[in-house]
Image (cartoon, rainbow, N blue to C red; front, side, top):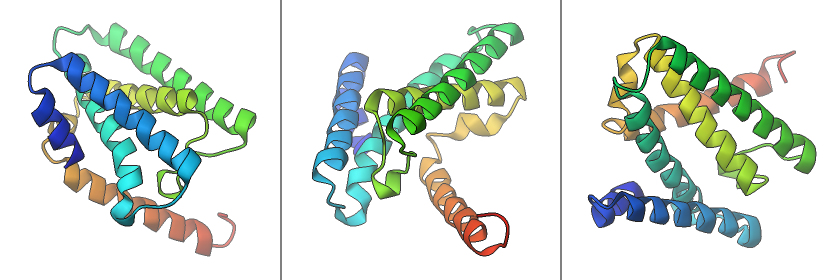
Length: 168
């Protein structure tokens, strides 16, 4: 709903959408960092997630465009995105000693968190394009489905990690 509201307000004005998007990210981050009271229905996490859904849509439109480049360009962008993602995750953990967890309101450094998230989105889109995965084109059309599936898979993986001997 948050993403729909932003898209409806901004319509064709991309800069307004980007401004609202960045404001959502900063507002959600500051709320979690300084207030640290969980809101009902995960609204605090949803505000942060909405900003990345919008950033992902912008990146998807840019990287999925057939005029973006040949395979070599996608490989360069993909490898660079993966490297940036690993560096930001490493810095977030080593400098602050915090892992990122949206449901526990742990984001670490905002710059590391946002940079890692955007570079991760770019990496996934480049891989999808390189392997000719058409499912990535549906992201945005079926985002609620992917979001719900993601939550189920993360919880299932956490369960396996907790209760299978030797994996914790």
